Length: 77
Image 1 (spheres, rainbow, N blue to C red):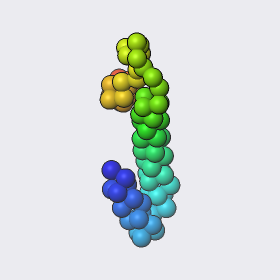
Image 2 (cartoon, rainbow, N blue to C red):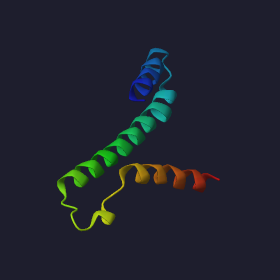
Image 3 (cartoon, helix red, strand yellow):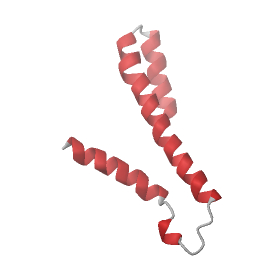
Image 4 (tube, rainbow, N blue to C red):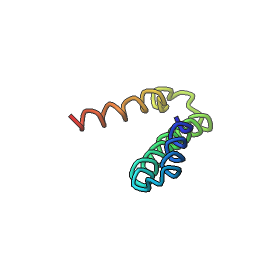
């Protein structure tokens, strides 16, 4: 995904379309970085925490990421 976004940004710079660069590329790369950064943080917390005896409270990484997108889609409708 990031490779496609960087290609889009380089095409915008090559075509001198700075509006596309600032209003498409920059927000897309920020959202991608934040989502994967949050997912990485959850994975590190899950690895470093001892969940023995309370496995039900451990963060479900995949479910959390899916729920974030579903909540966003439901708000758009």
